[in-house]
Image 1 (spheres, rainbow, N blue to C red):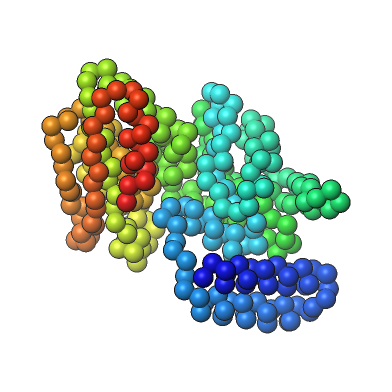
Image 2 (image 1 turned 90 degrees about the vertical axis):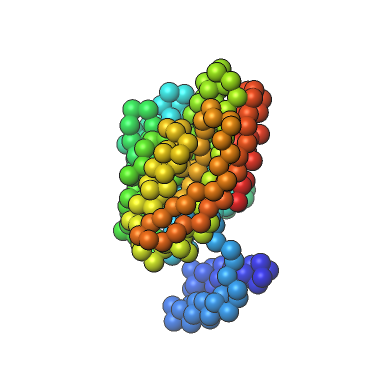
Length: 299
């Protein structure tokens, strides 16, 4: 199946090159596009990313002539830039790290990158950016790289607004999947270290089974409502240290090592949302990272 998609992608690249060089007309290119679309639909769909925002980035690339879409964060305290989530070729990662600095986040601009494909060819890429969140401590932006004149700035801004609306209702430590390795997980580690000074503590991983297929027909706002409901239920059961790592994965910490909750029932609009729970006890600092890693891979 992967080889089938690869063959279609190579054909699409050749068609784009032929159209750009004037070897085929617009009508011929359009006819080829419809052929590729029909061929792709005949192939069984690849499994979707569980991460909702990663799906949005991939969709933006596919529908808006974009080569690379990403969520980029900047932490003022240590002047650190992190490409938290992206979809597209790795070759764009390093140039973005050098561009997305304090100056970039102070006033989000639009650049034209000169990226050297090889020693003899230089291709111009446009870099588009839109702020998702900004404070004196942390800035988050949605960026996209394109080399196509068909790239739509209006479409890009719609996707930016969609991501912003999806993440906006959440607190800074709960921004879903944007900076889990560098912001949320760092705070989780600090919480564990603090609690360990008083003795062993429990870590729980709560995996929500197929929330998108269960609730997607209600729309994006309902997914946000359901996520808030799930987190509130977790706070009631596990205490204040309950974190949303993604729409379907949550992590909770407390000092009650006697309790071993096997399951929880989440109900939204009279719909039962199934879940699985992983429980582990940590006793020392060295246990923290392995325990969190197991929870991140729990499903």
